[in-house]
Amino acid sequence: MENQNEKIKIINEKVSLSELKIIAVERFGDMVKAVVDTDKEIMAVGGEMHADEETELLKNGSKQESLWGINLYPDNLESDFVEFDSMINIRSRQNNRSRGVENAQIREKILEIVKKLIG
Image (cartoon, rainbow, N blue to C red; front, side, top):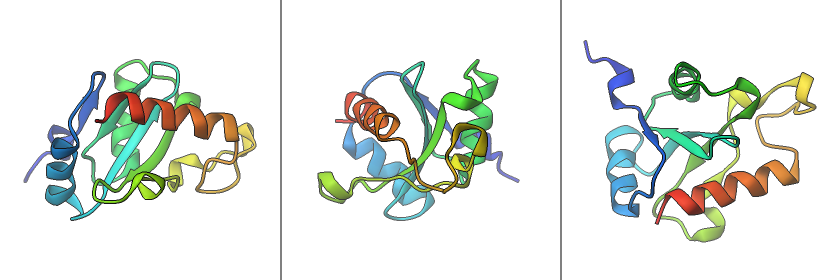
């Protein structure tokens, strides 16, 4: 049985869009699940579930309150590239009661990190 954690990559420096497309094809076809650490400005990709990537980042010293799940669509135009939708985002203690990211400042920070790391 394949170890899912071996597919998860922690990205802390720029990766190409073509690398992201390869990960998408290996997993879901057109989408890559990702978890962004807004403090460390890194992200994990390649997991089957956001929770798997979240676990890897936590093992790597990230704080849970800084981790946000998103989906990346490498074939989409800029406006549809990032989707804010993950079960790990539901946290009443941070006033985030949906699968999205309700705080506009956090959404902007996530988009900045994605732009910095993918291109």
